[in-house]
Length: 375
Image (cartoon, rainbow, N blue to C red; front, side, top):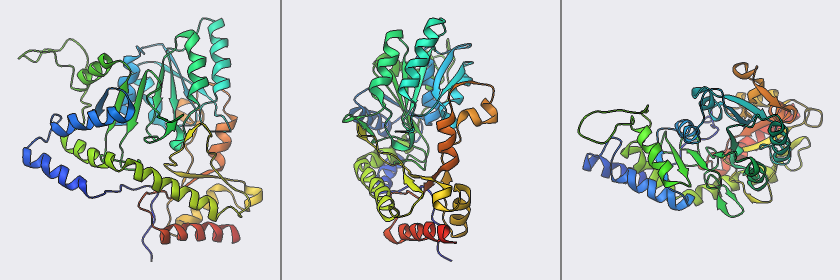
């Protein structure tokens, strides 16, 4: 039986090994070292803002929200169509999420709905403490109107760019527009450190504060003195070595992911009822995952049946993220709309998108999609 095709796997270029060997040879194996410092500097040049390397994207969101002053009783606006890690750190801090529906044109947070909700909340003196914007599957959110909607009320914005390294909004890396930006280097992302994340911020002092918190908030001095709550959130020098090599091939990985997505789009263009995820005109969608919508009436089967059929053919696929307002964990949370996100979840499917996916493997996926429809 042919090897199973997975959704999104790590893709090493070759330089990772030599960088890791340098870390071992120098014995810099913990959460300090030259690779860690260099990784932060190189990432900061890409993002155009100071950066601190952390153990995960979730840790970055947690520290980013804390930098924005989020605390018990606060409300945080966030898109309902996202992975749960975008929202859980809100609860870590004792705050409450309020979920905003998606824009059908981009699948990201609807800027007009956000504007209307902020206006309505301002009239009741119930503005959120912050807004979390997610760049879904590598699609840039429409940051201009989102930032414009927040500015009159001085509501800060955290960009969750976990799925969007290499994504650009009006020619600039996303994550650098809001007050804080967060990234993930999980094993399934466009580049990886096997596990890790990055926080960037306009204010270099904030980045220093996040670095302090990430290393257990140990005060200066020879004693182990602590006057603030901290966390064990720092990335290791070994993983940073992997990240440096991966960062060198970021543009190559973006080109590969986009080529895979557009090859699917073109090869399946004649298949009625299978519609490619929109590509917003204002930026560069990296197509971290290649995502389609299944119209059961036109395609002949529903999304879940297609997922099962692909699984039987040795191909991993996944539904689009289940919206937060449909999760039992957040069933009682406030929301604005939700129908668009619910429909995207019901019909959305992610196809194998690894940057290392070969042409033969991609043809297997395409042929399996066609067979599923023709059964």
